[in-house]
Length: 552
Image (cartoon, rainbow, N blue to C red; front, side, top):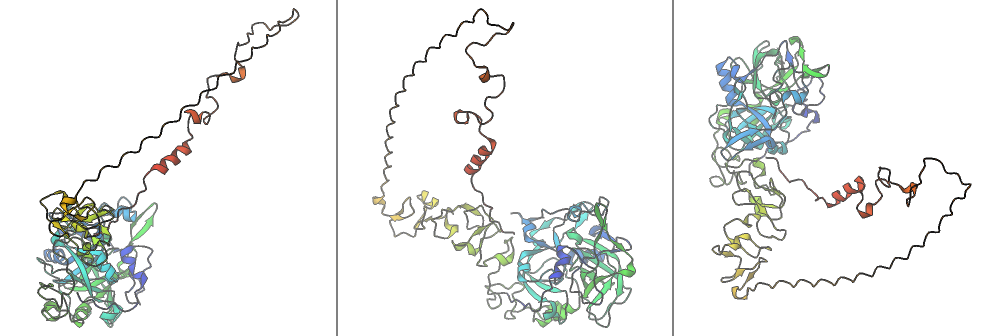
């Protein structure tokens, strides 16, 4: 099992603000930067698209080392290895920005930023990864940037990594209340050059800085307009800078003039201010800068103190028995360090979900050994489905099925004695499992002698009960003959021009309207009240339940 660093100390709930938004107060400059506040721009907005940044060396470094933290639920990897991020809101929708605000139409899947500092280590803000739950929940994605105007860089499986451990975090490992964390990726990063951490020592006041990250979760932006405002040289816990930083920049690398990582962005002032019906970027005087970046050189000491084998940071090469499953080590080559089940390369969900003993994580690019347990819930498939041996969703499992879900309708064998019939048994060429030699699988899924298999006779249909003879209708009683009306006498007055109707009472005449209103005749084909109709339809409608989907 991968070694997990102890997470000691109290977690401050408000440190989530820089990654999750919410109401934020400006940083108290006299306090350590444990509180994560969302930053702002100073003087003017100097953020540029990665491809438009004019320093080629800085472009190469940030493309290789800057990495976005994205919830696994927003990461999709297809069979060919192509990756898409989303769906997510645009920046304008997420923050209710005014129509003239920059980058408002760009997508926002990222939550925080980080820096590759060794082939398998990422340095980020401590409030971005507070626990192993956060480690399991988020992927780390390289190349989240525009390569040209309006053209996002293509993403592949090789750009997406999972977090499998927290190597160092916070006061317990850094020796002071540092808003920093170093995480271990699920495999070494290839084809990229990690950034170099600055040597111990304070930054110089007024020194120019470069900030690279994912403001608001949008593709990478690079800013070179900031400078060191207050180095806090006597303490060297963090320094104050005038970089143009935003929500989502937390954990971003702050580069010095020599392009070494001097700081890890932590917190600052509010991003936006409300103008009328929408929001615009807050613009402050550079003299009022309050963007705090933790001194990055402390990460070197924290990692080495954990005994992590890093040739670049600690001068110690990985070896079997060092307590860390790194590099090319796996269960077969180094069981002492890799006692846990590492996810296979084709696995596309969070590595922490593989063989975790909690659920059957199906449709994750490979078969999850947890799916061997029929009592576990199958995730990412339609309700009632099983998971095939290739890790894809299979047919719905019968409720009585007692063997591994992957065995049902797998197309490999006739799995008998499993509580229900396996459709694979329809193929006479499939070997019958779980039965003594010579027996076959009956339609109820039980082993029987083939000579004893007799198709059950269909149950006779019950004879219909004779319909009762209709009772004779009673003969209608003869209507009494109407008494003759007395003829008017010679003295009777008749109104001229008025003729009385013959044989119909004027009180019951149909004068062109509905008879008796909407409820009359409901029992003999008349109109049914709308409310009763809706209730009847609801009673007949099938109950629905949500698909049990796990983020991946």
